[in-house]
Amino acid sequence: MAEEHHHVPSGLTTLGRCLIAAGVSASVCSVVLNERDLLRIGVLVIVLALLAALVAARTRLVVRAERTLEPVRLSAGSAATAQLTVHTSGRLLGGGLVLSDALPDALGGSARFVTRPPRRGDPPLELSYQITPTVRGVHLVGPLTMRVSDPLGLAEYERELSGRTQLTVLPRVTELSGLPDGFGRGEGDAGATGLRRGLGEHDAMVREYQPGDALRTVHWRSTARRDALMVRVEERPWHGGVTVLLDRRVHAHRGIGAQASLEWSIELVASVCRHLMNAGRRVTLVAENGTTLAAGRDPEALLDVLATVRPCTQPGLVPPPSEGGELFAVLGSVDSALVQPLIAGAHGGHGHAVLLDVAAWTAPQETRPVTGVAAPARAFTEAGWSVLVGRPERGPDKVWNDFCRRLPVRLGSG
Image (cartoon, rainbow, N blue to C red; front, side, top):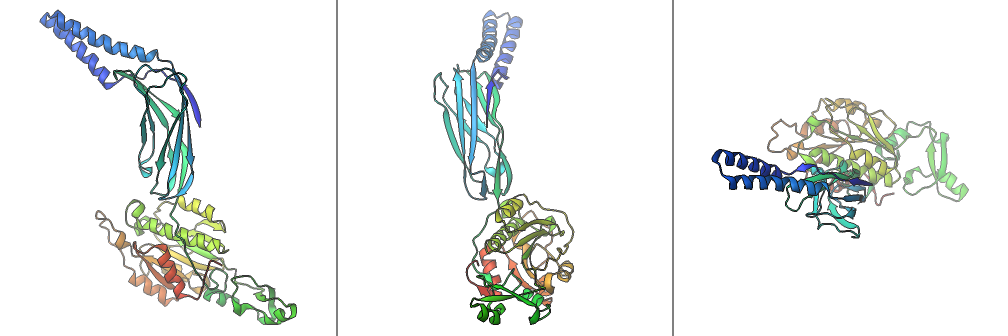
């Protein structure tokens, strides 16, 4: 974006004001002490500061600036390039331009440039700098401001050249591999339970085999008749899909900034959801209060949602609405009583839980007690859930690999 400004002085600098104050003091003292030389010095100092302000006021400088970001959407830890193009016309009687592009602390703080004095006919000034965000979120880059002073630095003006540009920082995503057999299709353990609730073999419909279909669903009679591999689809099928639950409760997490347990949870959820969506699964992302945050098969839309997730003060866990799929819950600090509503409302009678050992993320200044994972893990296991434990040194790929090892696995993403 670009804007054009005709600048007027903002006023004297601190040095200029101090110089005038010194001149006034010297003049007063010269009268008291009857020292004409001191009076001359005091008047000279005052005139010098006022003359600097006058020179700055008569400067005719027109500045136009543009900023571009590439890319405007990136993952935390990746780098973006900010390109500044500054057009000037007129001549500056004084020092160079001081340009400052404001950045929040999460993006590394403001970028500052000092250039030589512009001259008439100069080509546009091209400046660039790198932005490496460490914290996900929607951040604003800018405004870009310019500060100009007289040769002695006694008077200056500062004006905004360009407004703000939005930068979307997505959560980190780890590439995953492998997929439990039938997970999210209604063909795994939970799905098989749902299929058995159908009316029987005589109520089955068939369709062509698709990569990833379980072999046990092959309808051999139709396969022989049509000379093509066909699979059985019940009239009352398990709807499939995966519901991923993200626990955002502020009191259930520990740690600060990008190293907090909540950020680890979001990275795991982002990695799992994208992996499942790329494998053709329908994913529903829900919060601890049962609210649906995102749904569908578009991983980019889901990552945009996760970029803006913030902690909440919800006291407990609310089971998500059942859509006939499997439940994959990523939970912070919980106890065995807190998880009972989740167990009772689980899809197909059981699900999968990743319990964060949040004590491992506790910062030195955090003294709040932390519930261990043993009791809730026992409650989930007794209810037929598969349970995994998350720790800061175990990335999403390690957790996912453990999950796949506990269930039959189909290699690849299909």
